Image (cartoon, rainbow, N blue to C red; front, side, top):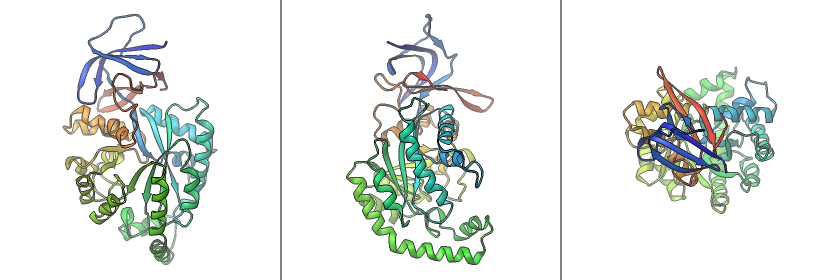
Length: 378
C-alpha cells in the first residue's frame, strides 16, 4: 500500500475551495478533510493551491516538437517525449493528442506524416512507462480532404481513440472566412497572388464535391464506435443547428459569439481556446474567448497550441471575478465530462489522484508539483 498525505493546502473542489488535507492511497484519492496534519511523511504545501490534474481535449503541440523549425523534422519519438514533458510540467495530466487527418495543401504534407508517426509512436510508447501524462487520441478530420476517410478509418478502432472533430479549413469558411487574411498567410512563403487565388478556387471546388459525402461517411463510422464527436470552427447558427441534428454535441472553437451562444441554447457544450484568453483575443481575428465566457457560452478550455496556456488562462479567468473553483473547472471538470472520463477531473474520494500543486508569485502562475495516479511526474 502506497500512501501520500498532502496537507496545509488550498484545495480546489468541484463546488468550493477549502483549506485542508488530501490523502492519496494506491493512486486514488482516499480522503479529504479540513485542517493541517502534523505527521511523519506528510507533505506540507505551505498554503499552495492543490487542484485536479488538467485535461487537455485538443493540443497540436506535438506538431511544434516534430517541426521546431520549417524543414527541420525532429526524430519522431524523441519529439513525442518532449511534447509529453511539456504537458506534464504545465500541469496537464491527461492529453488528447489532436492529430490532423487530411490534406488541404497548407503545410499538411508535414501534418500527414506527423499523424502517421504520432499514431505509431503513441502505440509504441504507451506501455513503456516513459510518459508523464496520460495520452489519448483525438483525430481532427478535414471534411473536404480527398484522403481523409482512407487515413482515419483504420485508426478509429485504436484502443486509445476517444474523440473526433470535424474540421473544414477551406478558404472562405470558418477560421479562414476572411479571404484577405488567408491570402496574406499563404503569401508568407512567397506564393504569388495568382497562385493563391488558383488554390482558393481549387479548394472551394473540392469542398463542394467532397465535404458532404465525407462528413456523412465519417459520422456513420464514428457513431458506430460511440466516440466523442465535436464540430470545429462553427461560424453560423445554421452550422450549429446542422451539427446538433447530426448528433454532434460539442462545438469546438466556435469563431463567432452567435454560434457559441446558439450551441449552448441547443444543449451543446462549447470548447474555447486557452491561448485566446492569455493573449487577450484570437490570433485569427475571431471571437474573444473572454466574451464567450462572459456570455456563459464556454464549458471547457483547450490548449490548442500552447499547453501552459491552460493553467494561466484558468487563473486569468479567476482574476476577472469568476470563482476559483468554477475557473479551474474549465480545465478539469468540464473537459472530463465532455470526454466521459468519470474517473478524473475532480478532487473527490475514489477518483484518480491526478493533482497539481500551484503557486502564484508576482502575477505568475506555476505548477510546482504534478502527480498522476499518485506518482510524482513533475
